[in-house]
Image 1: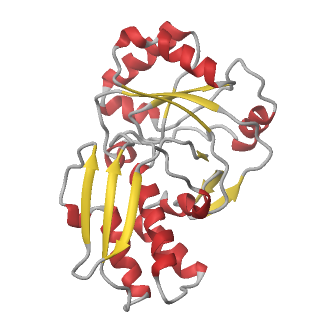
Image 2 (image 1 turned 30 degrees about the vertical axis):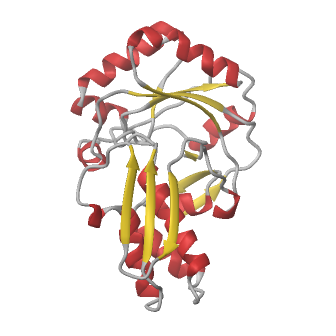
Length: 262
């Protein structure tokens, strides 16, 4: 299940007279910029529209890297939406969706946003309606995890829990903390045992459940209000986690609904 929140990178896409370029600001982004998802999205779009002029992408990185919060995938989805506005051609929704899926399993969801259950590799998106506005306290420890590394250690020994029953509990949520679950936690804890220790300390200091985001390494707690989320972060402050966020679920139907998070 994917829930879009208001923690986001800042991106700008503009045409340029020379060649495609990527300017990086904010949090450090390791690796070859040429392999960054933003430029990979540009190169993929150019297959759909060979006449697309060179573009310059400015990325102010604000979502912690290696947190399991989908920052890179959301960036790629934004690039596709921006190029759609800049392009003289109009690729079909099917072509854009196929490109999104090639870029990453989470990218198709971020083209739509909001809240959804995603199946398959993430390309089968089932929007979820009727949920109350949810607030989240989010913490990102120093440890970062490789998504591929986590999935390589995943061992599904049972049928797990039914998503629909969990959604039903969210629709009736009125505080107290719904029982969230993430079957990737055991694999992540195998890779980084310190994350299990941190999760236990978060519970001990706050008295509520904390669940890992995606393939990790961030954790979140569901709250009924912003004040409650702020209160939780104050309770866990002695743990010294530097990257902390308070954000609400963000309903959206298209990229045009996004605003500058600053």
